View 1 (spheres, rainbow, N blue to C red):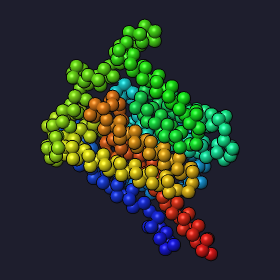
View 2 (tube, rainbow, N blue to C red):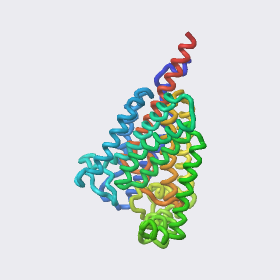
View 3 (tube, one colour):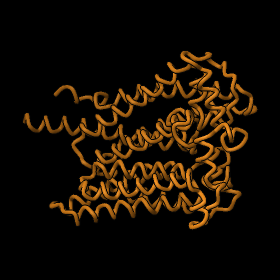
View 4 (cartoon, helix red, strand yellow):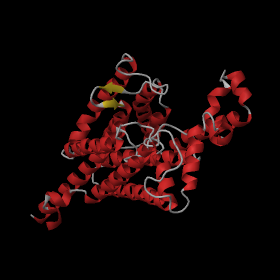
Length: 395
């Protein structure tokens, strides 16, 4: 009983240690990335430190909200997120300019770029968790009909932000949101009699389309009026050296950087391969070149430890809403890591998805720190609940 009497005992020290290690890795990697001279006088490492401080403030605020309060805020935050997505789409280019063909950011003087979709991902996790808990409270006796109704609710709730994000367009973030939906559906209690046919059909259709893109693109051109150049991202992924001077330039440079790092790497700030924008989406190529297979493996292992800790938190909590929130965060982080690392080594196609907690980016970091704040809150208030329950039982 003494274990949970102090507030410090309810604090998640393991998560704090992991985030501190990610902070150190991020600063070291960004410092190396900007040493290539492609960024002028801008010091992204200092800016990343500032964003980490802002993220720590977000965590400090979030930790005081328990699951009951978060449930009440879920739809408010969800609606606010949709308004942000609509605003960034309709705002004039002086406020929300096009960058790399996408209109996804607000430009705020003295602050920089803010990408609303990074926060919407976490708002959606709260909304989906609220949908599931409310549905289960209303329908205690389950059937295929009630499960289908829940599936429809989750689909509609997700489709609205995905549609707005694709208008920007931002395929990478849309894929992250779909991975969040998939993870939450898998633990929602929906019957596998519904899940397997739906996801099986989706996977088969996706595989068939990829087959047509690679083997029979003329059929897509003829019947769907799709132009061949629209498949260049897939072609450049499968055969990067043919497109090395164009769409595969980043990938070829990333493969060269990581491959040249060998086992132990070239050492701090000894990068020799120029990788554009290596402080953001291709930060793993810097780690691979300077610290080799060993350094890259350590970073990936830390992410596995983080995911393990999140899974443990989800299993330990006594509130189903908290479990769904943790599941959504696990799905989001896992997809980010596998997609980002995979695209730098040609395992997956390139998308604009950063490496969580390590890539430079204020919006991405604040969104992820908000997600971690929810985990801190779950851990903190769960421990408080355990102490209160034990105290009442002993009385």
